[in-house]
Image 1 (spheres, rainbow, N blue to C red):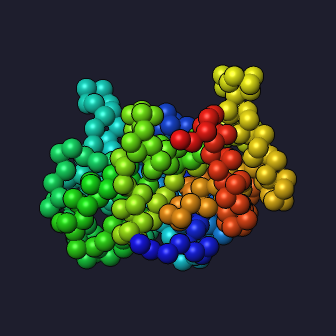
Image 2 (image 1 turned 120 degrees about the vertical axis):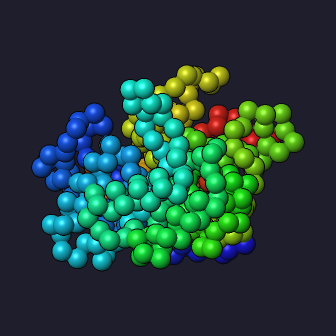
Length: 324
């Protein structure tokens, strides 16, 4: 099992919000300026890894990022780029589907490189499991891309321990990351670890053992949706519990109190709770607002400062009942 240190905990900037509306055919100057401001804010809090996918905003997220890099000398050398492929969005007469065939991977990566205006990405993630996946084809595509210098490392997204192990058997390069939805709101990844042999575990939809596999193999866990879409930091709402207060409201109040105690922002507390976990979780923050990006600054410090009691208090408050 790998040892987790403060240095291994880091924030990742998720670029899905860049590029303008999903349904807009093109991006404009304002979209490039918005991307530049977000990138600057992320760099300002120490972010070096920027996360993309070929489908984000129909490719416009990568395109505006490429425009910012083209007009910002030295930016590409300061940062690491990560993108994903494998999802095909639906269109008239064609259902949404997954495609991790050799030719599809090569095509999509080359398209991402063109939009990003770069010769390589540091990490390529396979976006979702493809039921028709042939591990040999994936290995052939990844091997070619690495030989050509277009991809330096490989990761996955939304995969279980079994799927990762099965794929790894055919690869010559190690899988270095697994990106999953993980937050104080989306807690199946955590609940599954304590609800073994418990009736409540029947309602948990998370493959038990995935965290442990990643930890043992040194696979970085990247958490998308880490800020819970603002639910606990300004948009708390929900059905009232027996005491007249919803778990969302109670959690938001607790986060605010802990933020005050630790001289930090609510966002830093929310992310710090994730980063406190020994898996060394790296939260992906996706806000396009520079002020909200800046609010995440002290997440690693808060992770170190949170006590065990405070960590469990956040968890049990969010779940609305005691743990077994």
